[in-house]
Image (cartoon, rainbow, N blue to C red; front, side, top):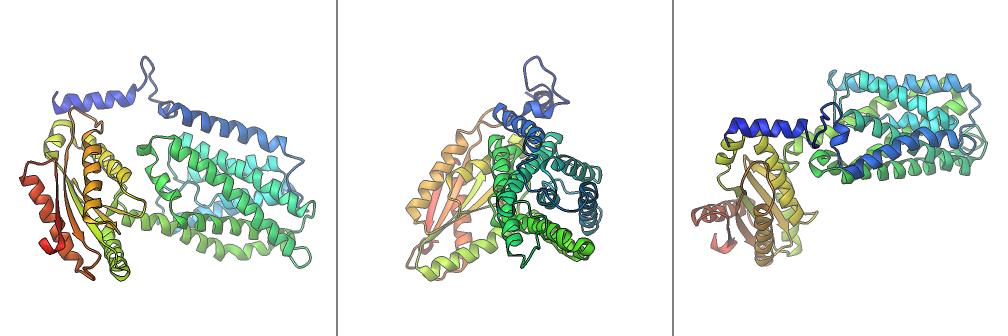
Length: 431
């Protein structure tokens, strides 16, 4: 099959993924059934549960509900516009809700649960209008998750605070306990729901979300966002318009929320979600130093796809990019969570394995080779991979990282010269 016909077939598979059904306008229908059930259930629940829990939630603020709701929407608008200002007016498709959970959380503390529906709907609509672009069904699902998390927070707040409208009543300790426990409930439900989306969907479509949910910084940032919403709610119940003085806090929160996506974009390769080489090298040097201090062995793996240029010429670079992502997933499946996977460049990958012997690293490399060889790639035929392993023994002490890097590169070169689709291992003293 020629490259042109292969690309045409690839496009056709996107336009018509289900026999006899044209779903070009319905990306949601291309998602796995289990995910569609999850998201649909969440959306239906988000529409019904707030109405059913009207009498069970907190929402007993002394302020007029309409005025309070309008204030929360206004604060959300200010929040999004500050974010746009910090980003230079650019939109970011990789932040699920740009701090919008703060205002859903504040609504849960200040208003009856049905108010979550208009507050979340308007704040999400404004963020969409101002340039945030993700798949529509993901955006709707995200809003539903936030509504359900808000209901959970409201129910917890009612259990702690009962019908007291002032979160700053007395010493404020009860209000503080209310905000903290309700925020924990909000974050717990939100995390569960987003994990459902991340792991019920195909890995290739939710790589960024899975990666984000696996980092502690996401939860710290989200907790900070929720506490800003809780502080805003407390000031509104106790000090009214003093909430306007929180504008600098919103700015700081936006900077924190913006920093993490920018850091990830700088450190991770977008195609494969592997570390960029400079980030990988920096973290690997630190890992090697830790192993030297602890008297532990460590190894490096260099891997290179065989004849990948021919694959690109036959099937096109878009298909080639998808193949690279599948290879990265295959490697990731055979290493541990604390191992470091990097993209060296082109079709080359690098892995740093702390506290692993030469024999163990060779076994890992063999599993990677077998998994890649048996992976189903777009196009025709299989893809093979050659790997070079460089090992540093536990008794070697501090070793120059570049020496081990060069040894792994030479081992890979030997594997290529010996016929490809194989592994060559070299100990440091043999480098």
